[in-house]
Length: 145
Image 1 (cartoon, rainbow, N blue to C red):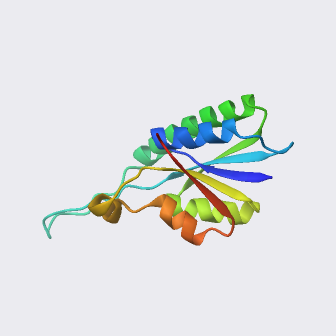
Image 2: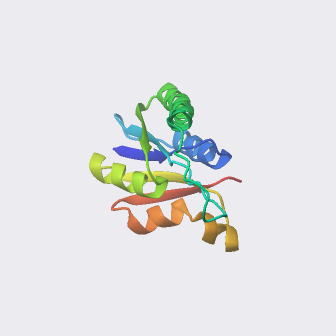
């Protein structure tokens, strides 16, 4: 069985990781820990303000941070007896998770839910909602209790 775990530095992602660790999986189950680095968007209030190139160092720093997160998650899952691999990719987390699951032939995607509602959900979007709607496989959304 192949499982894709969407992972970031939130307690919600940690809850999803814990959920996976608590389940009884078939022998040789593989968990692909996936984290997405989205390049921040810069905005200017004044029309004549020059565009500032996004510093490559910042993207590299974000990537290193996500690599450390995924390695820790991968280690935890491996210690639970699961086969693991970590991937840090650039892009929107929603699309990255669906694309990785398709490419890997995953049978399950596990994500944490931030539980945003109203304007926060509208502005920030919902990774869980997108993945549930667009994935070709089953999706488990774990709520942090």
